[in-house]
Image (cartoon, rainbow, N blue to C red):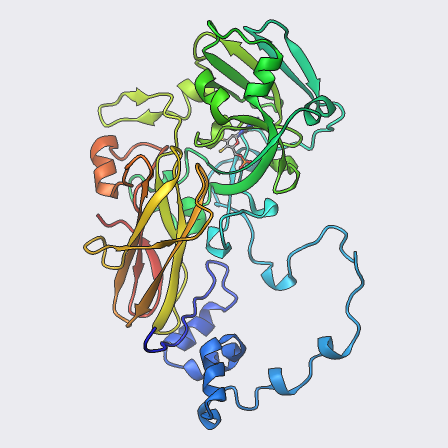
Length: 447
Ligand code: MTE
């Protein structure tokens, strides 16, 4: 960078560590107050001190530097004070959250992942979004049984011990509920990226490939065309998956991010169906049946279907198409100053790797190609970023992902032309964030 712009600061949204009054103060011009509060966090300001302009800098006499804090003088906490580590108390606002009023019963609801507060591509286990149809359970793994039956030579029942002795794989994949961004089909519905896109997470899963298990049971390679996956909860969650996909990269997972699955995410066993909508990732997995046709269960014929403009429904639209979203800055956040911002977000495709992400700051008129952080993996989140020097004028921020098949993420208008506005599922339209002159970022529909 030839000229060093001031470093950008973004308030955390929607659970601001600044109160609305404080933000209003700053917006009325009382930036002196904020400078004091944030001096320590400003890397640019440090450089000013070093260059001898100390008299002008708000850091002069900063008690955070001059007065030795307790933690440099005393004895810290002992090891294993929290045997299972927890985040800092200063990060307590970063939580998965329920959208109030979305469903009548919390046991049959969603908690959304706080994408606006995450870095890289891996979702911490405790922040993985949750979607239960009939509540979650913490099932005793010693009593859990997993059966494979149907068109197989030897129907088998596996204990968790049996499964964990088999050859395993560890792979990073995103999981996205088909209903993600589903509230936005008709109009702007929710304010922040946590609620527009937070039915999305990405973890490293470990488990046994279905190819190993189906081979172990001697599945019928001629007649076996589909498998049915069934959960052990009260929702009778059952989904059909084609045998090609099952054999390609699906696996039964017992671990997530290096530890056993969390109960909310299907402990002790769930199906991982890379690229396929979340509903097929059956949790508390107790049975796979091999059959010769799709099973037409309630969760694939009546639910998780796409209502088209002519009144018909599309069924079995399983793949999560290429999509992206800017997470920083995003709806509900406020840019406190003009200057440099590292705009960053997530891109993914159920059909493979993300090839490119373009970002626009003027509502889609001009596009610049963003940097993709490694690793860029198949059916996995990809982190992208791009520099933005905000001069204080209004802007519309958008990201557009292109995957390795050449598929380009559609504008909202293009998607509505084909799908209408009454769907719930599979909304992968380009997301627009409006940046106002006062720094506020909000959800808008453009293009
Ligand atoms: N499996 C069972 N047994 N019961 C469920 O309610 N919900 C499905 C799927 N698997 C569900 C299930 C849906 S709709 C989604 S989007 C994902 O699990 C959510 O997985 P997560 O809660 O781990 O995020």
